[in-house]
Image (cartoon, rainbow, N blue to C red; front, side, top):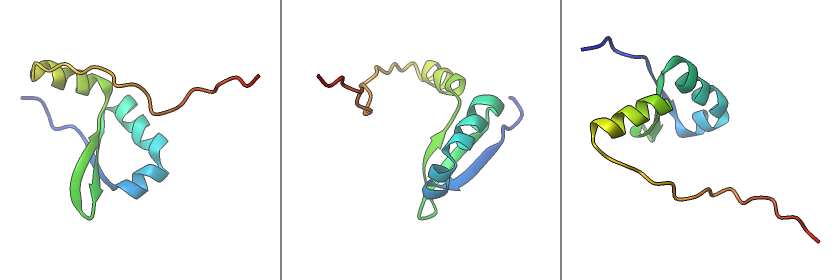
Length: 76
């Protein structure tokens, strides 16, 4: 078994205000941030490496559902 990895816990509102920091901690230090809503753990931000290992360990596959961000459309 490996040593425990760091895990932060933040309210969704606080994480939203510091989203770049939350993402950078996952990306560069492999730190998980557990998001809470009314003190209940509801989601987690993890590195892509962790996510991919979890999918492989669970023998699951996911397919992209598209982006919610609309591309800029050139206006004539």
